[in-house]
Image 1 (cartoon, rainbow, N blue to C red):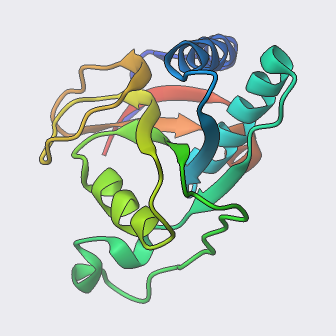
Image 2 (cartoon, rainbow, N blue to C red):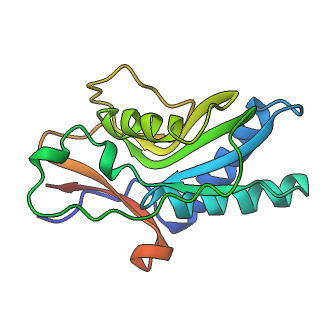
Image 3 (cartoon, rainbow, N blue to C red):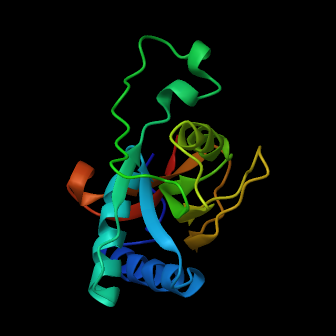
Length: 178
């Protein structure tokens, strides 16, 4: 089945990331030490792009790390085959910092719950924020994004697919049949 009309083309995605960076700067106080952690896999390139946009606005580098949540998933024992575990890379301390978890889509909240568990194994930040490109609703956990640029109604049997050029060769967001 073909994808639904594109909720976000590459140009719109770039504008959305610029808006997310501006919104993040507005929510974070100047006294806060900010770090971005991209949830693998598509959250990482989004975090790297946001860091670049933040540096362009502020002149200061924002550290970026990656978080792999595979071993923290609540459905790990139900997965068929061996899960692919990628490295978590946090080359800085989290202590007294504001950590922004970055992901592509917020749906049930299970990924974010796993990310919080993984994050806390690496330290105790001052505060944690959640930034997502798309929020599709349908929570199973009481988790919400602090920043989201796209809120999408998704029909049953469909999903929000985010493509990033670093992984997929192109940028865009579509609603697709599962």
